[in-house]
Length: 132
Image 1: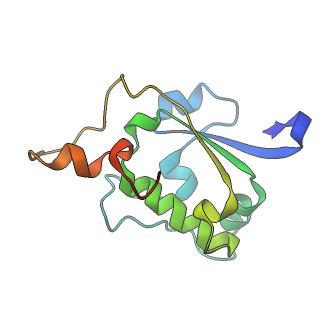
Image 2: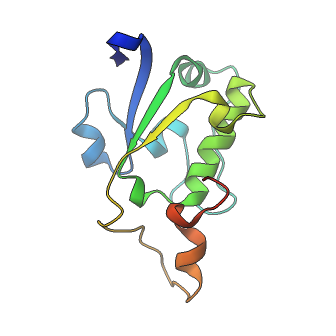
């Protein structure tokens, strides 16, 4: 998908397959970046350097992530590492790509098995001070 007036290559993404299917050329975050489900602090992309998938990541200028309230900080950090690696822009967040986070934080947050009292402050994207 292109943002015509700006001549930018755009990739719409969503956390769930249903939301991704509602977008033109939409994909789930997990499939685009080849991330495991569920994500944790060791979450990494399984895209090989020099592969066709890696080249497609580099070609995109903008990634629009819908349902961002569902994305935990581990997944967003894995996306950041993946884009830095494949664009070879390791000093710039997300490899210099534009990431647009869309969604409503008043909807529902990520589902966490066996949550502890301190977990809401540590796992959710909104609370991740390194990203902001």
